[in-house]
Length: 231
Image (cartoon, rainbow, N blue to C red; front, side):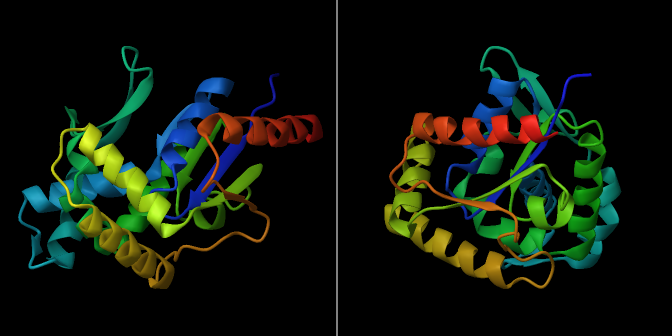
């Protein structure tokens, strides 16, 4: 039987976790699951349903409607990547907006939301051969993951990456606004009561401030080969 790994990638917002995880999944022919996209999907649903007022989530209504959410990832062969679907609708572009980014941390710290998303994530990883990125994959979702990586980069570099990403998607954004949003998200993610952003004790640190995706892939390939040889 072919050896397969569970690879958990955690880290700060806009470090390129998703691009890195997607590239690893493509290289290994593994399933890629963007855990952050799942929380963004819940956030978008809540915004559309009017479940967030003046920045405050309606906890009771959001919790009661979790059962109505069907979140899945569908591979798009034309783009060569997985896209996020909410109740059969492709919402990949909508969940990357600055508006969703402004609310996702508050939604993701709701215990009932996290419990439901973790349940779904664990179901996907039962057979291994999975790459997942987020903020608590190596500490909560898959504490026994075969390879854990914790990513970071400077605030200014992360803000520039996020700004360029949004501009490339045709969205009108202000760099200072994007930078403030990232700093606010860092603070919220690090200090939330449920599953705060932490580096797992056995996670390998990757500061990619000055690294290209190609350089990161060379770096991680060595780690993967070591893990597969140890299996």
